[in-house]
Image (cartoon, rainbow, N blue to C red):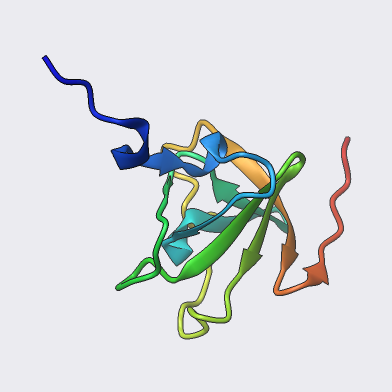
Length: 103
């Protein structure tokens, strides 16, 4: 039997190495109570294409996103939250630092 090489397997956002970037769908990001999150269970693709138009950089504390390629998309409160067992806080969107308070 042959094992699928790791470089052919999908990588989820939560499994990206710190500093690694990948492309995902815009609805992977959502907002709850004024804080942006990204669903870490979504796939991080190596290339942009189709609806895979939001660049994500994984950092230790969560993620940084670049929405410059998906500016037509509009986010709503709670979107993307369904079935999310891995919410990662978003600290920057296009370089604009977000406040994040830890309770």
